[in-house]
Image (tube, rainbow, N blue to C red; front, side, top):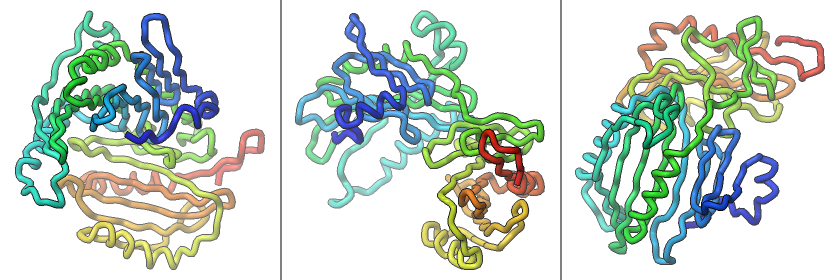
Length: 360
């Protein structure tokens, strides 16, 4: 496996990002990723190769033979109130879909079989009592694989849901090492410290949710709340209602200040969206946006057979160019369009800290 970051090249970044990777006398190392609120203890021989990037809390490489086709443990996080039952249904549906795939010489790279998908209760003393109370249950999915060279390997996925966050722990290992690694993997999960995230968001007296680092804010519709954005490019992220595995979301991205040709964007964006999603129905117009103008595209399409609406606004201020993207179930949009548009209209940009407050 080729690591995305090597410890040697990124030792300075580790210090700057406050990622702990220390070893103890019991043969375990501590992997601490404060930005993700994740702390685990792993065997010393497991090497940290990726951390704190997009949705990835960490990835560690396992010591295996050079011929091994798999060998890593990872923790990833995603926002939203996913039910374990919906996830289990998705896993089983994926397994059934794999059975229906007709193999060809070009497409067959591995055989994948679901061995188990079950939800079990978390109880002390198998896990600490506070851990059991917070998560209550887990979904375990075990898969077997055979690659194109007939080499078998296995994967275990463990899903834990708490509030608005889904934690996904994964282990992949070749057949000869799997039984021993799965013991260490389960010990790691049982001893994991998963703290609530500290978002750089605060509520203003006006009702806006302020992004403290970038000094912009929005009001959110009722029952929506700021959440973890599973991308480093997303500066502000919020979630609304859950529809199975799909969540209503609102995200803000930004780039350096530049002049935007709104008329050109209004003409080009629908074509670009149609290139990526031929079935989508797209409209575009220029709309008012807090004393300025924005180009607004409305895309109607589907996600996993669920009709959805995506409203995206692009506009520029003297400080930045912004993309504000609302994605929700079509039923939600039709029922609450006025309130959802009010959230988009509520965007404000505040002066940097220390300067007089000027909401624009």
